[in-house]
Picture 1 (cartoon, rainbow, N blue to C red):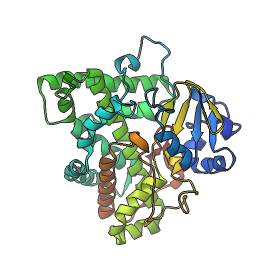
Picture 2: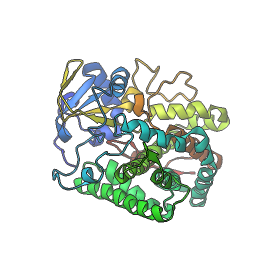
Picture 3: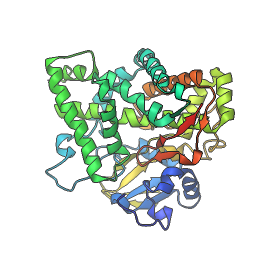
Length: 403
């Protein structure tokens, strides 16, 4: 797994890919908030891990001190060869999330209409039909893997529809996304996934030039900024972001939420009996099981609250940890379906807040509603056998339930 030496002290030597962190980061955050609220590690090129709501949101909003243009991945690129790999193919990264203004401003503006509440609602019928079709495929067997058979199958097909790319490539897209995020510590897999995504969109742009459609790729190809067409590398980066950020993040949220309902029967039965709780329940699942940790790579030395952060190091936007901060959330480690005040930052904070939050909420709601309507009673076959993925995005990868 790369840096695999034993951890002696989480405050000075943490590893977000360590199985102990992946499986149960919550107790680690609790300990760090009391002893060292901004931890440091030399692993993976060096990084800092804030654990409080105040620090995470302050850093996320301070784009001058902590810019995104230096990179958003939680570990460094997989190659040291300056003449090889994605940086040359994607010189602007994957905007808008990896960009600072002004590039961030206009690329985000182009994506937002495709993620608006109205547009997201237009994808709901196909999402509900997809969820029903997936359940049809396993309901007679009396068991299913809620992660692999259901949660992981939904967002990739919705994003493929928005991009106008083949939905029958969903398994291939999923493999690439997992290579980039879940197995980021594996240089070969990360490179394979990144290059797979990039080459696919290079080919897709060429095809759309000949056969434009009613999709995001076609629209970007025919958009002018200050009278000039958008560079191909920017369009490819934007589309790569849609695929990578719109897939693993949402399926992890869906999987974590249904896993919670499988392992907490009182909450499951209450949500079935009181469907009006769904809006607050969705926000609570997002808070309690926030999947995404972003990063900012420092371009120069910075001192923050006495922490000597060096150029080249990363500061991890630990939104999941912020959402468990007891200074902000009452009983933070409990899922309270009717939590009235919930200022969670599952979608980030500041100008880089997730542009796809409306779409993610729709997919999360529809997937849970459809599951509970068809399978109101279910439980984990073996709670100890559930496996989780972590690092940049945390969520269940296998969780078999019976019904």
